[in-house]
Length: 267
Ligand code: DGL
Image (tube, rainbow, N blue to C red; front, side, top):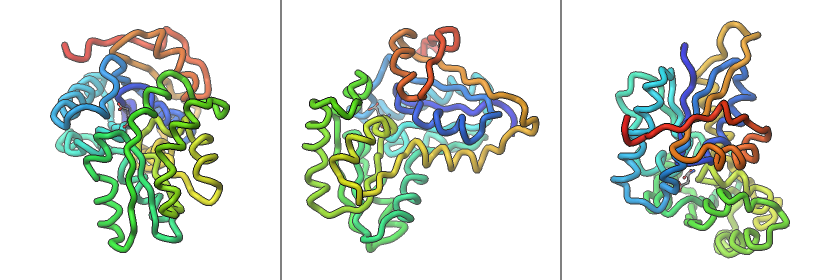
């Protein structure tokens, strides 16, 4: 499979997939599109989410990508069909996370957190129960978490974020879940706070990591191992706003020359 791997999200969350995929397939080029001008998707209608996802895919295809990852829990849950008939492999984040959760659970009680649109779609629950009807699944929308992450309020010491997480997750803790799917690609950034709240005995399923692992199985490394893959970033709003928070997701700074702005509605 030649050509770069295309990855998109409503904003920055999909960078949690990029971070892991760069490590798993360091020789592959990656093209990332973050729809920063229209984030969040999670509070929008299914029709709007689907329209945005089609535009995001069209942009990535215009860049000659050989595979597309919808690194967005909301798109993957609400509009998985946008990846049909593209002529190239398409992967969302729901299936890899569901498989990992089923492997991880011992007591069969699984929690799912996500945006309002993701939880309303019940996509995670339906897939979990399809795989194993005896599971007990408990879902919780967490609409305030994406804005907190996009604002960079992710530190373990951040009392506001800790309290918001506690209020969302307490009901799941009371259900006795042993596995929690972070059903939105923004949430891995809050892993330490979520883990403090849920306790050591609850396994957190990182959608970014699981979908990167699944993608790496489909897209083999390119044959010249010495080739160092390049990551190019495209956004639909200000470049500097993206740059400052992107480093947090990726674990390294990116330069402004590697980020370009596109008018996603005019393509
Ligand atoms: N990263 C998106 C997701 O995984 C959430 C952000 C949004 O609401 O746009 O669902």
